[in-house]
Length: 398
Image 1 (tube, helix red, strand yellow):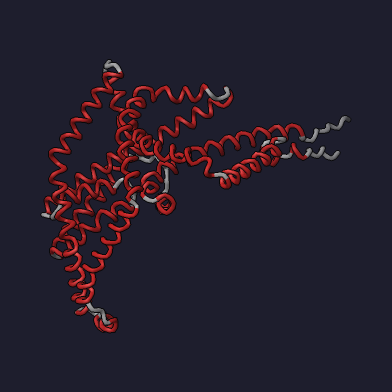
Image 2 (tube, one colour):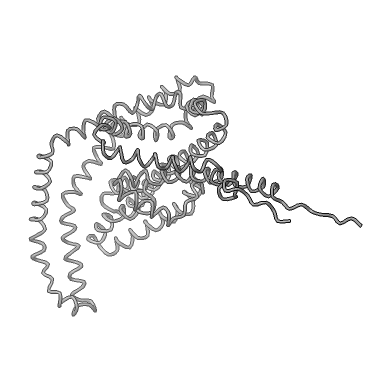
C-alpha cells in the first residue's frame, strides 16, 4: 500500500517555512516592500523623525559605551553595601577628577606636541622624499628611475602651493557652509551635555530595562527574547570593555617604548596608537605611519629601533593582553573583521569603522537565534511528518 501523499501545506519544506503561515509571510514581505516604496516617495514627512534620530543616536551611543565601562565598577560598589545612587555619585565625582587632571596636566603638553608636529611634518615629508630619491638614484633601479625623469626640486616647490590651495579651498568650503558647521557643533555640544544625564539613568535603571521590554511581549516570546538580549548584552560588554582596556595597554606600551628609544613626540604617538587601536587590524597601520616617517628622517638606526618596539608591542598584545582581556568572546574570524570594517567604513565613514564590529556581533547573535528557532521548528515538523506518514508494518499470521 502506497503511503498517503502529504498535502501541500503539510510538506516538510512548507512546514519549515511556517505551514499555512507561508502565504501570510509572503504577503508580509509584500507589505514591507510597499512601505519602503511609500517611505521613499513621501520621505519629507519623516524629516522631523530623521532629525530627532540624528540628535539622539550620538549621545545614546556615548552613554551606552560609558554604561558598559562603568557598570562593573557600580556592581562592585553595590556588592560592598553602598547604595546604588551613592555609588553612581562616587563614580561621577571620580570621573570629574580624572578628566580635570588630564585637562590640566596632560592636555597642554599634548597640545604643544601636536602643534609642533603639524608645523614640522611637511619638512619631515620633504626630507623623506629627498632621501628616497637619493636612494633610488644609487640603487639597482637607477636606470629605470632615470627614465621616469622625476624632478624632485619642482615637487618640493609645488608642495607648499598645493597645501596653500588646499587650505584656501577648505576655508572657502567652511565659509560657505558655516550654517552646517554651526549646526554640527551645536549638536555635538548638546550630545556632550546630555550624555551625563543619559548615563546616570542607564546606571540607575539599566538593569531593569530588559525586564521592562520582556513584559511588553507575549509570554511565549519572552524566553527566546530574553536569551537574545542576554547574549547581546554579553557581546557588547565584552567588546567595549575589552577593546578599551587593550587600547590603553597598547598606548602605554608604545609611549614607554618610544621614550626608551628616544623617539620624538612619544606621548602624542602613544595617544594616537591608543585611539586607533580601537579599530582592529587597521588601527595599528594608521598609528605606525607618522612614527615611521619621523624615524626614517631621523636615522636608519631609529627606524630599526622603532621596528623592534612595534614588534614587541604587537607580540605582547597578540599573545598575552588580548587573549586575557578579550578572549574568544566575539568568535569572529579576522578576515570577516576586515571585510566588516571596509564595508562599514564605506557606508558610514568613521562611525561605521568604530561601530561596525559590535554591530556585526549583535547581528550575528540575532541571526544565530533566528536560525535556531527555524531549526527547532523544522525538527519538530519533521518528526511529526515521519510519525504521521510512517508506513504500517504488516505481520503475516501463519
